[in-house]
Length: 367
Length: 247
Image (cartoon, rainbow over all chains, first blue to last red; front, side, top):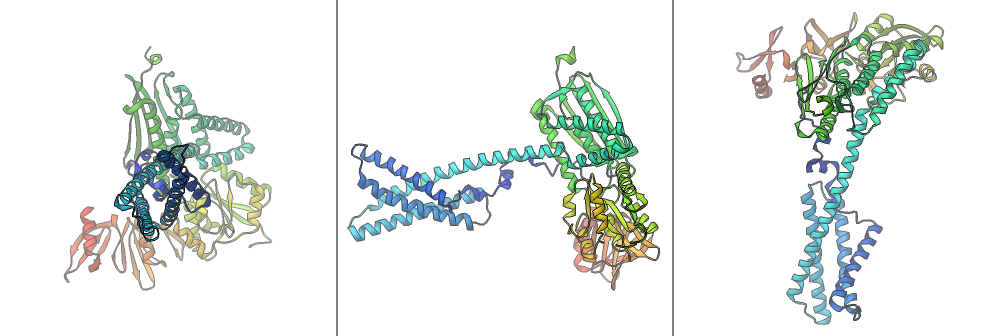
């Protein structure tokens, strides 16, 4: 059971890497969906505005040149509609590739369409009106198109990035919530309570109270700090519920040596215990002992949870949950205490240990 | 549904005693049948089925040792397997493996009315569904029907699968038995733990103790607790040599 290896890092850990962003979404989404009437309408309106700007710049407001406006509109509308059609096709038929390739092909499509249109315009004017626009006109046109296309694609890229960020944030919030409220735990606890109501109403009442406390804590804002005493009470409530479920398979040993007033982030220790029980005790027919150590020494907080290793053969799915929970804790501690948080896991043949250590300065504790 | 006249014999399997107690209470108070036995995990469940021949098994899915899905899969090999109703707290993806319409399952906390309904339209797991279960995580045991009943061999005790005409001989710590499964499927299921060395042989990587040259120029493998050398076919030699070096 490769618990200690961090090869399968949780997505939350990697959400700043472009690779992860790309995996969240198809790079093709860089190109907006131009196959829809509504987006084509926007493209037309936008390009008309651009045409007005260009006409105003060259002819002024009072002498607004309707002739120039008409000619430019004709050209620009042809151009953008053909580009919209080209990009629509491209988006549909592009094989999956990375973001740079998508940008490159979109850019190429636009430039080639413009080149084609330029050549056609030159030929048409020459043929029907005997007017020669010259190579300078072609070059100018191509440069303008290339610059505008680059700006536009950059805008799309930035927009996509911000969409992705929003999406990945949402996803990690959902994951965090899910890992804090394990559905399996919830429904099994409900089942136990349903059973206890008949056998032992007092215990059932106690279990409902404990479960409520746990869920109240789960719904609190992540990162809020509580006193060590509060966190420990929460852990004991959690262990009480697990004890009801697992009976004499679960033994817990507490070694607490820190002032009650020490502040620790809410739900730091509890998920570690939950992990230990979920992976070490629940899968074992005979159960075992979870060792919990918490001490405060010389401005450092030391947390350690040990559980027996159970060799099950169906653990892959669970492994991911495990990493997620650990990564969540790591992230929360990093956010609160900066980079000096040390978190280590150690996998031995019979025992799995997780250790967390971080500097903690608090006047209340030192006094 | 069998035993229409007499009471239905029910086996309750769950690792949580309070969960078992609740189901037993329902069965008793609603007079749905007789609870013949309770079991705490898949292995106990199989033993209990052989001993008490229940009509129905109420089977939890997540259990230590052997889970409910695997136990159901082994049970489906029996000549007269019991009907199985799964109970689960939150595991719906495990049940996607087969058509839930055909096999009963109940969500915990179980309602007594749902239990009644499930017991009134019992179905047995058919071969197709048992096969679908096979696609779920790899088994912890191999089961074989012998004259003593269903024999369960933990995978870690097996050193060799050898195809022999129609059947496969399973060589394990305590002896040998025959099963009827394709070698290819075993190879896929236990990839990483077992390795194919010959058209007819799949050996446990853990059991490999030596790699040697034999008289006719070929190679063979030595396995712990196994006297005979296992010949390696020519196309597997390079791969096996590399594997043995890495051990």
